Length: 280
Image (cartoon, rainbow, N blue to C red; front, side):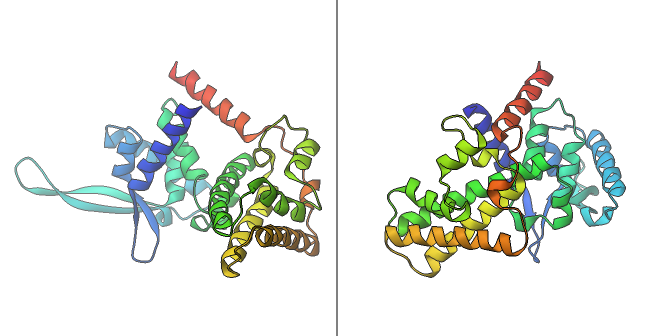
């Protein structure tokens, strides 16, 4: 599993390194650079994958030009002269479609599918694109955000004087889950000892916890809280406010949301077995 994590991190770094941002803050990738990252050696072969991705974009009633913008640059050839080399400026969604239509026997393709569909910040994907993800893809996506959020929250909590992090996080859970601690939530979900509760939540429940996490970090910093009891109280208050908001909107309380049949770790294992199957 550690080897798979390292591979994923290295792949993520590769895709981040070839990402470009225009003067308006829009992200894009060049198709020829993505081709190399996805281990395609011939542009003609990669064009076939791009054509499939463009067709998928069209079938989804999206404007192809918005995601696959034709471009090019002058490159030197053997004689010292220059010629135009055609290329595409790809949106994140275009990259996702390319990964979905790539050679599934390549391990890097599976990793690319995860990266472009899941490992991205919420503000970098519009609601239309997010809505096209499956429930499990949304779970992976939201879980990644909560993982990053908790990392950032832990730093803010430590700066606020928190030493007992179990108690700190339970304060937030108690506010959001009407008094339930992490252990209580795990027992209600029927989880095994030390099984991660966040890995066993649906996308809606994860989103509620992400809101709790982000708002707690903001409150700790905004109010310059510098003692452990104050940090715990702040976390509880934010959790309670998130719960009250859900109730006011007529939503389902987090403890009443269904627990997915498979944890995200189980889904990851299945994906890795599939990768190994194609490799063998």
